[in-house]
Length: 469
Ligand code: HCA
Ligand code: CU
Image 1 (tube, rainbow, N blue to C red):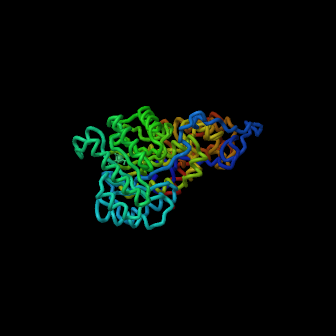
Image 2: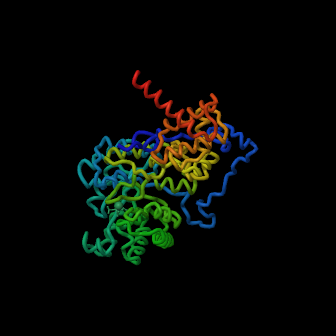
Image 3: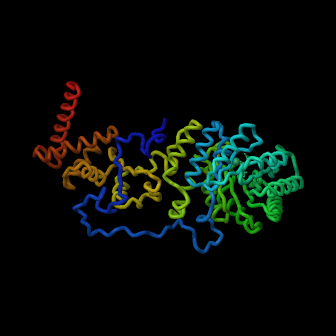
């Protein structure tokens, strides 16, 4: 199992890492607020900076700081090849997502199977804050079953691309429009929300699309949905289509974006910029094929744009737990390069990075780990390490070395790490041996042979202790 499943956002071998907590400490003068005598406290505190990712005030349609999430792990996510959620797991996922704060939960159609219908009813009865939606084909039979489950709304979809019209349901636009009107009016008559979406919107005829959306908007649909069912769209195409649609309908606009070419988060961001109001997500992006916009990645992207807004809406420290819950349920690992929870998401390695991170984490971090209940790490036992990172470890260990001595010890770490990566324990031992050598007068800066002798002696003593213990 991946280490990130149970633990913090910790790299493979946590023994090589130094946790760094600068949250309530001065952002300068080294690690954990220890004073750095070479740079006394006259150092200016870092000033809050302009956020270049924030929406431009001039862009009045931009909804990057005004959106809702429709969480579809329990619908699109069920379409992931590995997914099977029993009732207990569905309830656990629904409760976790509700506690996280998503505005909507979308559930598998109650027409899919008897258990799906029972599960839908059970989740509706939980009394969650999130609104509960179910997702159905644009068909009166499905609509009749859906409205009886107790949901707050129904998401209706029908294919409009030439592919779907020819190879799937075989219906023309006139039939699709007539059925859409019938289903929407029926759901509305039950006093619940209704959304109308076209499957494979980006490979549908634009005139057909705009015309059907205009029709359903006129009869009072709550939302229209654009679906990039095959994941073919790029951010610019998404922006253009949503912008155009925004000028044609007055209802809300939802987007559902598949990730076949890795664009799902960027596409969601652009959809919001163009005026979309609702984004579909699933935990870890699970869904058909490679799935859709992942909840965590979307949150990371929108947090970068407006951290305060995102923090005010969602319980961000819950993200890791939710991802672990779903990962376990569908028997996958959280990907190593996952935004926020990937196991190296907050680990800094190169000496240049480590130095700047120790002075001010924002230098190399657009996301604050503490906002997600996570910890940043600085990795030091490798050949790219730098003396500033080593110095911070020296201070953490309570050892007293001059900068010159730290640099000398760093040179030895690099020499050893040229052969193999050094564990945190190896680094600590080296620093302690170096320190006691200096203290006892057995070692001076640059005396490599003396250091090697002391290290050898230390290793032998440890070995003997191990044998006699
Ligand atoms: C599918 C349907 C859907 C529906 C999206 C929506 C898609 O093909 O499984 O209702 O907006 O990707 O088109 O998930
Ligand atoms: Cu989909």
